[in-house]
Image (cartoon, rainbow, N blue to C red):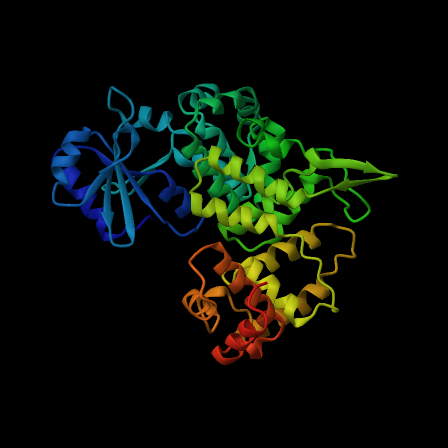
Length: 430
């Protein structure tokens, strides 16, 4: 028996006491059957939108599409939606929902599960099946194409053959969907435990060409002796090996996105000259197209642009500090996580991850000992430089500070005011 929290029960009571039908629907029932946590609750009601707003005028609300009224609560969200059918019947409302596993309702008065499209059976059989007519469901809202793949990936379910066929037939409809909605589904897919399964389905169904066609360019593109997988398969293998953090998953997915475009033959193998910076450039275009934020785009592109870390034990401590400075303290551990996943995804059995563990230890030591200063952490600043050298403001001041930074990167003990001023007196300009 479903036991909804008090804020859901209270909302049901308000609607029912006002003379309307009101039932719990959607994901809460699906997750209850699957014994999963319930992040959000949904109520379907015969009350019209304006009446819902009146009944909950004492609560903070905001509106989504399809006349949904969302009640905002501390740590919770409750969505209340009028029946989708113009005649206002529950059964027809359920019939117009996307998948059978989401087309169930719970009558809290009668303690009764209403399941006209056998959603519970599909949950038991681990199947994603469109409700009634899949062609009509996807034409009503093409973003359901992505939702179906995301649900299958997240839950580890299979997609019903008829539904799968309809997905392939209607993949082109994604061109009509707002990029923001596509972005949100991609984020949810990337954060699944095993997102590569979903991206393979996107590719096989023709949907990936509508969303990130650049990824499709890597299908069947062989690499070199260091790689077992094609460019496309390597990207998906890399995604599987980074932690479930959005910017890392995006960086893993796109880190070699430009390889097919820069691939050139060299003897009996291939070279991918400057592929990291080219992939970073292409990533900016892709993420802008999908309406990702500028800050997230910059972070992802930055990681991709510097991901080719070729560490050896011969690196000096200064080289370690330069790597930290290049990545940024806030990014260095993400960079190493991306590179480790990248190497593991080569699939050749000789991925050199042991050297990365040594690098991680050296990076951690440098950070703990505060041995990776930036210009802002130098013991003198631009005003000191201008005063000592009698210079006017200009870019040459930054050049002088950069010169000093390079010196203290190799010799951190010199990062004090006395030694830096002495350096300037001996060699004032770089």
